[in-house]
Amino acid sequence: MASKTKANTKGQKKQIGGAIVAIITPFKDGNLDEEALKALIKWHITAGTNCIVPCGTTGESATLSHEEHMRVVEITIETVKGRIPVIAGSGSNSTAETIMLTKHAKNAGADAALVITPYYNKPSQEGLYQHFIAVADECKFPMVLYNVPGRTGVNMFPETVARCAKNRYIIGIKEATGSLKQVTDVIRLCPKNFIVLSGDDFTAFPIMAIGGRGVISVASNVVPKEMASMMNAFEKGNLTKARQLHLKLFPLFDALFYETNPVPAKTALAMMGKIPTDEVRLPLASMSDANKKRLEGVLKDIKLIK
Image 1 (cartoon, rainbow, N blue to C red):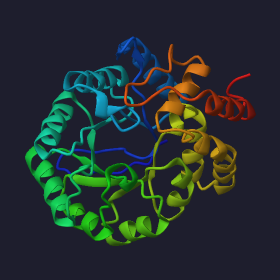
Image 2: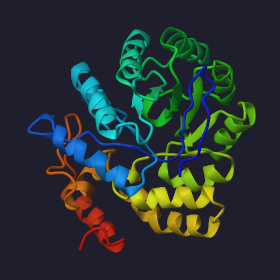
Image 3: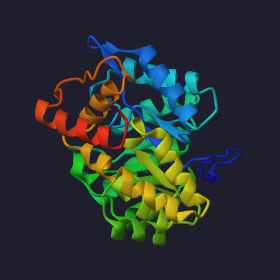
């Protein structure tokens, strides 16, 4: 089972943790492939995925129109039917746009929003704080912050996270710095009920060991059952099994970043027959033949394809 954490929001309870998939957005001939998305969601629920994030970085949110973004969120909520939590990606480098997308997620029936640090603008720590507080105060909806300096060009310091965590609607963070020191400081400085999630598959196991609650995962797109098993084993105290799965899947964690995410994930899913096409949107491009061959070798090694 996913870790059960009560959000500090009046009248609401959240169960956010474990293996959380940052789900890809399938395309066909340049358009959203709604049927492929529904099929993926059903597969994840059957496989034991603990929670779904539509419209994250892995979902190519940057190239979705507002209408497509909202439709992906709505399809996810409709298909999940309340069986597991849905955390809708709703962040932007515009505070006004973030508020608009977060309100849509709330009204559509999501359980929480995943809100990235504004990219390209490079706000100060005070600017980051004011951005998240403005969204929280305006939307009054549970928010998971998302810190990924490699994508955004700005790092939100643990002290800033701790300031944000005082707001009742800011319930957690996806930490994708790759730094166990930074994650340790976040856990140390924030309230005990603040949900700290790994933003990288390769740090999922070690972050759980220092008090994290799970991972928002790229690998879960490809190995949902195995990622859920790893997180569940850890929660049950079976560290040997969790460690074995971490080590077994580690080559895949690396392979899924041979090129820019989500290109390898989509390529893998197409090889596995889970989506009709590995289509991505420009400025992303299809995986090179050389890297595709390397990825194929990893998938064969862990018996995902023949």
